[in-house]
Amino acid sequence: MDSVATGLTRAAVWTGDGVELREVPVPGDATVVRIRLATVCGSDLHTVAGRRRGACPSVLGHEAVGDVVAAGPGRERLVGKRIVWSVTASCGTCARCTAGRTAKCHRVRKIGHEPFDGDWPLSGGYAQHIVLPDGVAVQPVPDDLEDRVAAPAACATATVMATLEAAGPLRGRRVLVVGAGMLGVTAVAACAEVGAQVAVVDLDQERVRLAEKFGAVGDTGGPVDIAIDVSGSTLASAAALHRLEIGGRLVLAGAVLPGPPLSVDPESVVRNWWTITGVHNYEPRHLMEAVEFLQRTVDIYPWASLVADPVGLDSAASVLAAPVRGALRASVSP
Image (cartoon, rainbow, N blue to C red; front, top):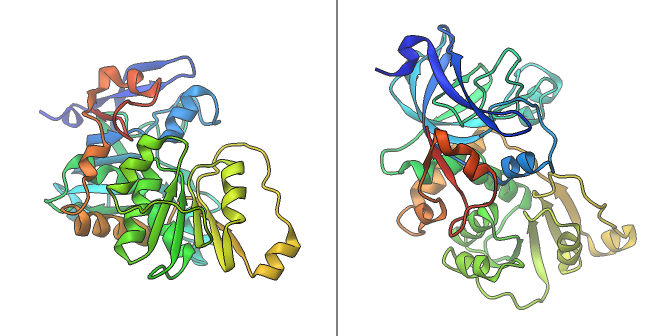
């Protein structure tokens, strides 16, 4: 019997000093999803390492896939479906939401970022069940996408879709991706799919070689039309900026931790017609595009190889302590 039927579930709660497994009541009038697999995003590693501030205690985890076992009003059609869901829960009515920026809603709440002792304790993926309030976008997962391919759609892949939208037309353009983690490798594949000539740079040459399996070409060090930074490194962003061709565009998507400022010469921006823009989180359409992209490319690129074999919920602390070896994402199967 699914534990939701008993009214209790288990969650790995980040306390600031470690991870504690706790039994948590499941509300009876909400959309509840049984987690099949949650992948470990780098931001969760940063939170546990103390590099990123967040609610504490909390249930971390915002990349996951699961089965809907109960649905709130208006979502009854979802029961029994395997889905992924957005990182953000938006109100839908504030000025930002009505302007199409639901990811930056004035009252935004976020999967895996909410206080455990608040009104939404089951907000993260490192649990047997998660509760999805109104305002969280959901997307059904096709049968041909295995869990370890689908789960990153909820953060890494959807963020890349938003980043590519910000980058503009890519076909035939010279693109530089800075950083070859999960976002970088995904960005390489997405750029290559639409006909860009895409190179990648990373201090880790093993990751560079991995990115080549997803469509990257060798970096010549020459000028580029578009640079996409998912490394979060100010030095790397600055180097990419100065490689832009006239009319080039720099998209920053990795700088989500405090760091040194990026020095920009306004005259260079003006004379070179450069555009510098940022992307944080994504819109519901990007989640849908992420799933569609993974389905189109599942037989082209070895997506499943990027995610390590899952550990159980009892071992969640072990994969939050350090990056996994031999893969870009660790995973937890509650």
